[in-house]
Image (cartoon, rainbow, N blue to C red; front, side, top):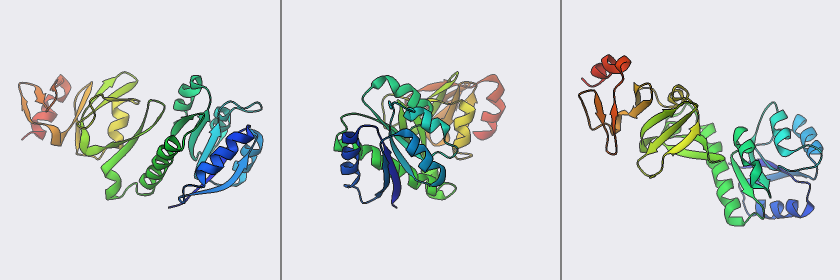
Length: 232
């Protein structure tokens, strides 16, 4: 798989660094570079690319405004010298967020994430796609292996995803209903207004409590009959 990409940055030196980094990856094909956002936006009206490396703080149009204006959005990796823009990048579901000066190691991690995500999107609806999902957390896209999910907790506009292989839960801006729609039907079950569990992670169900390896969760009144039926 080769991803067609462009780079947009008003600093010539930053463009040269991106060109050098991109040349190290045979899976990337650099189609064009732009030193102003307007030219980049005009190009994207007529040409389709898979990935954009784009600076956020540019004088004519910011990278964030450019991405927000796109009807069809490719994968986006923001580059910037300022951490203060990270949250806006998160809102636009950027794949990653690279702080200048960009090291080849950090660039490599972002590119590998783009390649993994492109492969995931190309296999959606197939069996191998069911092995993982992607969510936005901490200003970047994170791959979640479904077999590692123990349970999910609703926090109003956010959910916490508790995993077997990571000590700290993954926090993402999504409703419990929304994330359950992304998960394979039948493998995960809602047991409470605030909780859903992975069926394979359940050790026992007793006295309106679902026991997992790392937690014991309550069964809500509205879910008692469903749990009873499921656990037969």
